[in-house]
Length: 256
Image 1: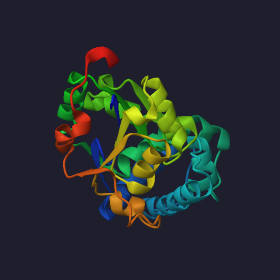
Image 2 (image 1 turned 60 degrees about the vertical axis):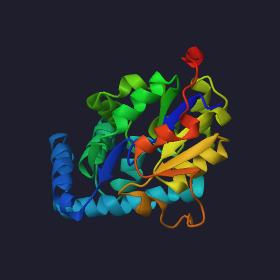
Image 3 (image 1 turned 90 degrees about the vertical axis):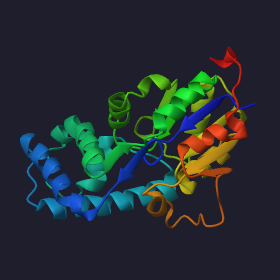
Image 4 (image 1 turned 45 degrees about the vertical axis):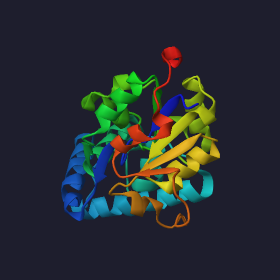
């Protein structure tokens, strides 16, 4: 019997979009913040964003193909994103999570999917426990935005790659979330938007089922990871479709 649903954040509970037109404003925000903190980088905002974007791409590839590790915000920005720049490392260490938070909020445009809260509320009412597992370079951004969306109270556990030190599809975050929820892995369903991270991670951990919804970033996230012949147990076009699946049948309140 399924007793818990665990959700991805970006691309699943929320729509996440990036367009080239956003590069200049993103660079302006981060360069201005760094300058306030005494870190001056002589680079045009759009060029700076493109630089960080390329370094981010290389870092993600390293994380997905070499180790499935997630570095802390300071290590990401000092060793990857700002590599080669003359930077006050003590100050960067102090503000690294703030910079990571700004990147997550300004490189992407985020908006809650219209159906997300209704789905979470319905699953809670049916007796399921709920969790989040999210790959993120910031300690704080996901928690903050869940509060801003008014969703934080729905979740019994939250795992972030920046804190755990592992990235999806590493099985440990999925196993830890299941244990927190008082469930065996086979009693959990994972809901995400990618095959390379979400579906593979859920299967590696022995979850009972996986649900996948398409997002604006699915194709680029799954690129290069040979996912063409794989699919979730339940592909859906809207999160509300989940409520009609057999796995979402109401259970007793004993798992609350």
